[in-house]
Image (cartoon, rainbow, N blue to C red; front, side, top):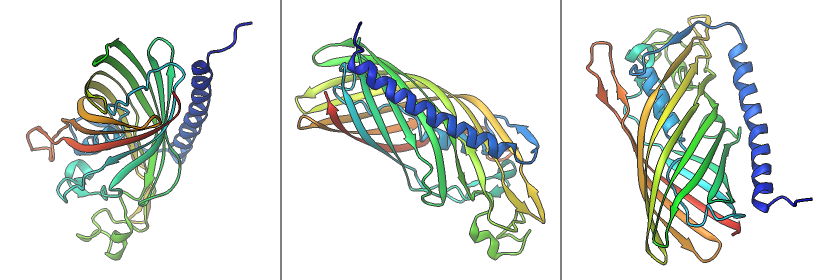
Length: 312
């Protein structure tokens, strides 16, 4: 009887855990969306509400951040990924009702999640990243992302590959009716939505994408890399707010294509530790008001990944 390869066994464990988490994330999203029937609106991908969906979904892409040795067969790495979420101005937070009402979008200054990398035969690797339902900065995430990576060309000093990646799950928080709005009378400038209580809104950050990557070894201790990708974002936002004495459960959906690019450096630290840092850019189109021209309002941020290799 053939004994399973260590990389195949590790990949099976990662996939099983990932599948279980995805099932829980989908169940949470479905149960929330099922609670009373909500009017559903399919938005143009350039509307301000859609821009907010693609902005925060893009911040969670499993892209870039190449680490030396991640496609070595049998490798197992445990990492912690962090991404900076730039603070949005008051005008950029004005996304509700097609740009007429501000939302509380400056919840978290950073995005953090653990991730596991398993090297497979034939220069393949599988990456799983899970943001468990731990409440922080006033939001509760339930996000699960998975990526499959293949190094097509692997030379001593440079490499070329691709990565297919995607995510499902949601983030819950008081976005439409934050606590600070309750200090003002419903319908007043400080509470234009008419909030009677703090809301429990659900943003679904779902996407699928593919990117081409290249990396070059500049020295024994430094690797530079870059990536260009195309992504399909399938976002949703379900309001969970008590406004003017009635429950608002409006469901907004937006689907479209975005492009992204990233570049950065990676350093191995000894035999077990590696750190990668990237700059990320994605041009996001938006019409801030119905009468405004279409403009590019991008997400530009910095990302860091620290990986400890349990086995290489």
